[in-house]
Length: 180
Image 1: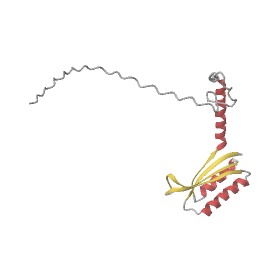
Image 2: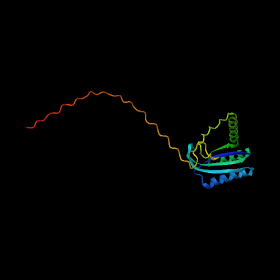
Image 3: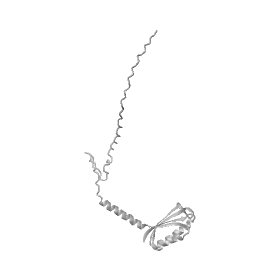
Image 4: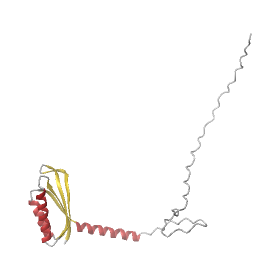
């Protein structure tokens, strides 16, 4: 017994009752062979990537099930001869799961070989400060402790202004006014 996923696209012109009848037929074949159906998802009408049988949209259905190889052959034969089914694909999922588990084991081995980096040292507690709680995050302020003031931004660098000498302007003597 192996785990499979089967995705097939049904013509949108097919009646909902016909689609349900096809699903019941496929479910019956799987159960008769001693398999089990894990999940049936109707994704609904979606746009196709390219035209198939002069159609631009199709009704997508995903089946996840566990059964033998002979049952999968029979399911594919039924989908091939059904007029309403435009495309189908069957993927063996247990192979993927084996690869995922194998990849996880390799990662764990690699991590076990790597030298473990020690955690950064916690800052020394201030004298008279209460000890940190066991679940506290290192470096985080204690609950209820006043928050330290945010550091001020550094002052912008002073810009040197070159002194420009300007010629001194002598004030003109005030004109004397004579009153007559």
